[in-house]
Length: 540
Ligand code: ADP
Image (cartoon, rainbow, N blue to C red):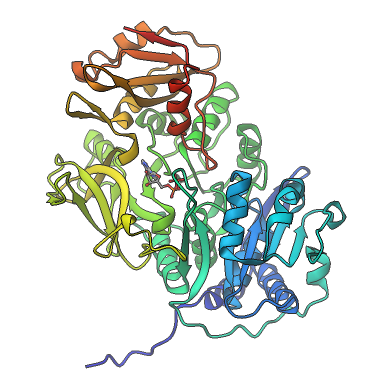
């Protein structure tokens, strides 16, 4: 029997219509070198309609791809809304990709138009001659004359182009399963892979982001969106915030601790999200230049493991709770969120909050052990995490990559354990695990423990070859400014905190841990530096 419910399609055109009318007074604030620039959601809606008209005028029809090469700002939000709502596909290009990867993804997605921020024109111009399908470049927040276009490519000024257009658009009805947006994984191994989100997946994911067991966004919030909009759909924040009328503060290119602290002081956001390295940097800045940040009701941290020491520092020194979450580009990205069960208090609640979190109803999870069989959720057995659900990728664009999928489940490449009540603890990425004498050593655990030393700003642990044990951990340490501590002292500090056989005997002090394009520890580069003998290592 079929239901008697209306078969309305979930569509980003409806999300745009809703946010720009019912929440027309909410704001998007873009940070600039001369302070904030403000636009209401009503204005964003009108400009999105103008952008859609302009793109039609440039020949964008059907599901053609429109790329963005932009910081987080109001224009990027307009593109986020207009492109999918008109039935085309938004392709967010990662501005920090290696040139050959950028060329690969733009050609692979066959981008027809690319919108580029003025400050990024010099970077983009270098690759443009190799982008085979791009016919139009629109320069936002800058001077289009600075871009020398190859033959066959026209350059436009964003504001001028929009000014000439009507401020309404006849948004089409699209199949909710059709493509709305795409994002390539950063491709730490092999070519980047295209994840294509649907109207339905984005809609459902946005609802989840706002739910009280997730980020709890509502119209009273002002969300500081630090996660780049080119990275995993900015963790769902722009669409979710627009859906419920939460205002957004966009930092544009001002991502260093000092301007972030200025933005916090000026705009007093209630919510923010970013990877741990951003918060570690801010913490050091705040410790040296204290300021009130208690306006932040909560901060979501994910992308890599949030060190417990950092969670305590924010909460105890600044009154700001950190909410730990796990996800991937392939999972839209929200996969699990670490809100403790209502019954847990004190230390027990903290233990839950350190985990990668609990799965929402729409994300199903299982752990697969070394022998290919499922391992139980007993909080101890370890396996590779596999997930499925309506906002989890079931394949890649133009590339099935069967190795990443297993009977319809996404293989995450993350290794961990799950408690009977569904809390996930990741011990490692499959490619980062350290196997010593047949036993696993969790690099994440070691990193968190070393980072709990007050003199340590960052610590990354990799496995290095060892004749006797196959592999042993090597710790790369970045000290806080003005601090001094020896490898021996750190090893002593660890003695009563980790099992004896896990105690690392290889230590190195570095100025900075190499980072990926989205600010995570780049262990591949660290391993290469070690293999090439570039690290000065102390051995015990
Ligand atoms: P990349 O592979 O380039 O990092 P993603 O941004 O999609 O691309 O990263 C997803 C991966 O990030 C996950 O598979 C996991 O390894 C890691 N990750 C995300 N959130 C967390 C977290 N809270 N704790 C530990 N690792 C995390």
